[in-house]
Image (tube, rainbow, N blue to C red; front, side):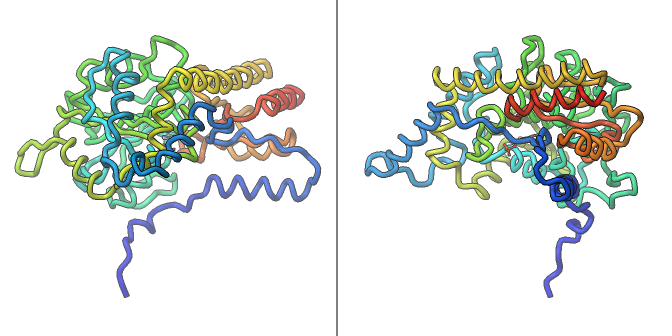
Length: 409
Ligand SMILES: *Cc1c(COP(=O)(O)O)cnc(C)c1O
């Protein structure tokens, strides 16, 4: 028999969302007719903007003509999209990124999971706790960690706790990591990193010769103009950081699939012999070998996000979600909860009342108010005692949920 990759056996079962589903089903089976409001989702709910739908339709029509047919495209993405990305997401903010430093892909989940392939297997990684599980699990699969302990933490990973005590800003690690995963605006805490904080990270990475993986999937939700949208707004970041961007949350592309990664050419690693190699060239090799490009229709849809009508429609969707976020936050604050995030991100992170565990609060909210959220402990041990509510729901549901929560207290 063929041997398996035993690293996969170290993975803890994908427990969080199946367990939520199980508890919700058990409750609704026992209480038919009660309306359950789901504020646990990390998925957008508004339909795609019209101008994006039209761009897809017209791209589909192109594909049916001999002059407009597109077969394999450039693996890195079509110029029409990459140039728009560079102009709008970077140059417009005074950031210098060149078109060949952008690699278009089918999602940031894949990108943030795949990127570790071009790093040595004994690279030490640092992650925040709580964290987006993809960063950790993909390193477990690769064999970069030991077993998980009873506290849910894997050996050989540096965990950086983010709690109310440090205002959800991780301390710079004492032990030197090769790779630091940062996600801002943060999923799950909804918190952002200031320019000063990101500058500390870039300085730290330079000094320690670490590389930062910066996941900016939620940058479009930033309302405060002083908060950086890209790590490249920080001087020197080109030498230490890779950035992940996605159209998923920004433009409702979770079901369409389009994202991109930026790898500046200055970003270098070394061989065991001490020879310097650019990560850009390694990723280009990896991407062109293992990926055959995002579909023409999808890239046309992504391009439409940068056209005037698309920009306007996307802003309207974001404003809708951020209004939800502010209603949830205000409602919770008025009901006496301690809340975090929700002003520059579509997530509200709350401290569970009366010392309840995350799961106890989940059951309480489901039973007493028929509201489903996400237990913070599902994102890591430091998430225990916290709870995530998402602003991606419908306005009526958000308003009803707030009324129900206020009645509880
Ligand atoms: C939703 C999300 C993404 C986007 O993933 P896609 O694969 O592009 O849909 C990336 N990072 C985080 C932290 C997310 O929550």
